[in-house]
Image 1 (cartoon, rainbow, N blue to C red):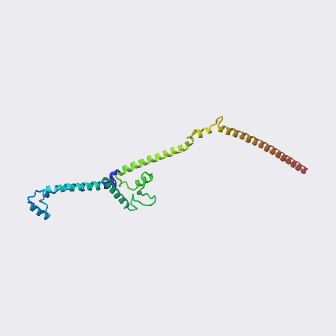
Image 2 (image 1 turned 60 degrees about the vertical axis):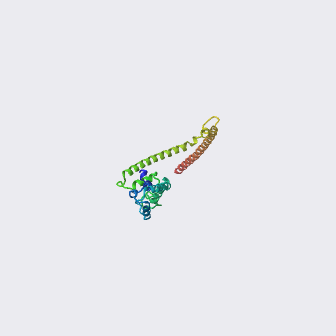
Image 3 (image 1 turned 180 degrees about the horizontal axis):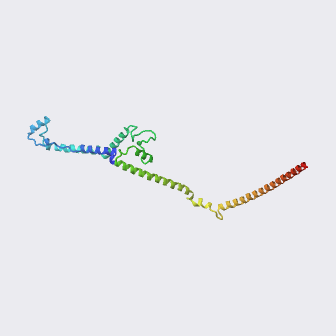
Length: 248
């Protein structure tokens, strides 16, 4: 919706119209402009009686001009643009604060109940969804529907940009170790005099020792298994001989 449809804009236009009406210069009426045929003595008597029909314009023109100047200075000093804008803003705030808590767009402390309230961020996707469900399609004007469609389209683009930004931030975190390659990459390269070469040499020596120890242990385990199997075979042969002797 355009800014001209806001409460503050409507009240500002109304106040300016009233100021223009109040700033209209004072003018003599047609009856007061009629030339008088009274003599000076008669004119004084007429003025004392409160009748101004015969008052000559030349005696009041200066007063009217001075009065209009005073009114103009007063209006310029009191009804300036800043004052009008402040009054319109205060009227708008009073309108919102006077709304019922259950009204749409009213302020409140209720939870997420699908009602849009003062202070809600219209850039948030959830609030945009609330705005789309507040009015039926029959109640929505063409201007409101176009503005809502534009807001939804901008919200989708914003969500896409947020996802893109999160992806870039994740890539940035992954690339942080490469920001200073002399300290992060170079020490991890295998060079002749590099620190990693010494670590690899020690690891190789340790691996050879471990492999030799495992080989010796396997040899001992095989010899032990062989002797145990020989004893078992001898026991089996003795049992067979004893069984044969019993039969005979």
